[in-house]
Structures are given as C-alpha cells and as structure tokens.
Length: 340
Ligand code: ADP
Ligand code: MG
Image (cartoon, rainbow, N blue to C red; front, side, top):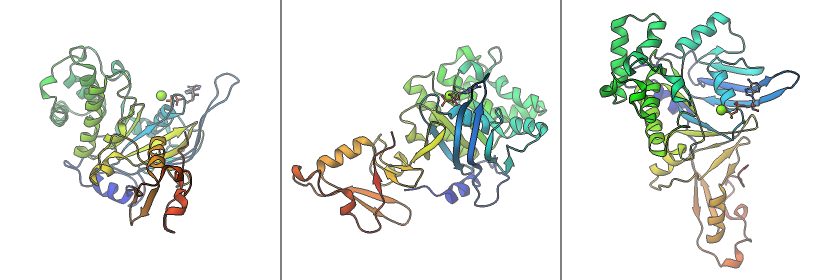
C-alpha cells in the first residue's frame, strides 16, 4: 500500500528521454527533504507562523499533491521550495541544496534552472502578446539558450503535450485548460528537475482540471520531473502517487489512494485510507460508517501493503460491540478516525 520511495527513485532514472536525470541527492535519499521547517511572517508587530514544523520527504521522480484548507501554509511551503521565500528555521534540502544556507547567486541559479512553477492565475503564467511557442522559448532565451535549441525544446514539449497545433496561438485564443497546459510547457522549458504547481486548476472547470492533472502526470512520466501540486481539487488522488494533508502549518496525514486500489481491481473515486504523522492508519468517515453498518473491518498487513476487507455481516445490534481492535491478528495496524 505505502508506495516505496526506492521504486520512485528508480523510475525517475528511467525516464523516456532522460531529462531531469541529474539530482544532487545520494542514492536512497529523498529529492526534497523538509525537517521541522518553520516560516514566520512578521507584518508590522504581528507574527504569523505559516509553517510550524513541517516534515516532508519527496522522492526524485515522484508525482504528489499537497492538500489543505485555505491559510494552512500550502503556498508558503511551495514558495520556499521554489526559492521565492526564505525559511525561518528547520531544514530544507532540494536536490542536495540547503535552502537555509544558500548564497543569493546560487538562489538565482536555483530558481532559473532547478524549478519550474505553474501558478493558479492563468494570466500569471503566460505573456499575453507572445504565442505558445514563444512563451516556451522565453525562459530559455533568458537562460541564454540559442535560437535553434529553443525551437527544438519548444517542439519537444509541444509534442509531449499534444499541443503542436496550438503553437502559434496567443494565450487569449486558448481555453483556460489549454493555457494551464501551455504554462506547464513554460515551466519545463529549461528542463528543471522539479515542477511546482500552486492551485493550477483553481480557475478551471472539472473537465479542464482533469486534463491539467493528466498533463502533469504525463510530463512526470515522460521527463522524469518531480512534481508537487498544491490543490483543492477533491479528486486529485486519482492523478498522483501520494497526497499529503497540511493543517495549521504542519503535515497532518498522508493518503495512499486510488491508483493502488485500481491495481488491486477495486475502483472507486473515494479516499480509503489515510496514514497520519504518527504512522497510524485512519479510515475516512464514510468508510467507518459503511463498515459499522456491515460489521467489522478486517485488516491484514502484507509485506508492502495493508489490506482492509469487510468481515461477514453481523446482526445490527452487535455493530457497536466487537471493535476492530479485537478482530484482527497481532500484526494488525492501529485504527482511528481521521484527524479532520
Ligand atoms: P494557503 O496557500 O494554504 O492558503 P498560505 O501559505 O498562503 O496558505 O498562508 C499561510 C498563512 O501565512 C496564512 O495565515 C497567511 O495569512 C500567512 N501569510 C502568507 N504570506 C504572508 C505574508 N507575506 N505576510 C504575512 N502573512 C502571510
Ligand atoms: Mg495558497
């Protein structure tokens, strides 16, 4: 069930075209490592603690999402990873770089070549009077890439995004979804190993949001780029390897969802299982209700996963009685209600 980081690391090094193969981490080390990360804003006399001890590892080549209520610190975390905000305390390493101890010069270099960014506001991602192709060439021109190479890279991205036919369009000649897909191309123009997206579908309808998530997944597979998405979109779990929940500036839990269940032949749009910071399993509310109606949940721990199944139906009045704790063998995981 829990996706192993080593397999992610491996996959990142077996990309279709070998992009993003470099990362400064040692074998087995996460690409992004946040330890007890704090960010304190001090507007006037006030202190706002936006992040209060974030612990997060992201493997190279992973495709993951961070979800959480408004004001929980998602953008702050993403901006720190992008090198746009400086952390206040703790540790944060990206690709072996220590973002708490980095010179201004290295930071500029880091922002330019190590991270791509996609913002929520479509207008913030694309220059309105440049075509899609020119928009993808622009960051390369700034980085000093010659004209021919810029074209080749733009074509490569447009092809991977199935947007060759949109190359000569201006942003206002595209749908919102197409604009965000083009923005992903711009974010990847200089082959960064890391792509960050802050609410990339916040202004889109469901169909367009799905297309954008699928595109992020496609880019992750084709170019091996590590992708971190901050989102409110409830169905995001279907499109990523892992969802991390942030609450009041801390990581509260992690979910391992849809894709795992599809592989085991069970398909649903719902979140089944959450692992909190203490490593406890937490069942979503609907699951608990359903399981209580039908009897007990049985859990078995196998080598790399936990299987939860319904026990045979019990008489109604016993619903509150034998509790999950009494049902499973000694190896069983601990159950509890979700944090929210
Ligand atoms: P989210 O993206 O999850 O909505 P943010 O990371 O934007 O949350 O904000 C987290 C907290 O930090 C909020 O309380 C917000 O008001 C505060 N905050 C964010 N940026 C600043 C800033 N530049 N100055 C002061 N407070 C800020
Ligand atoms: Mg935000």
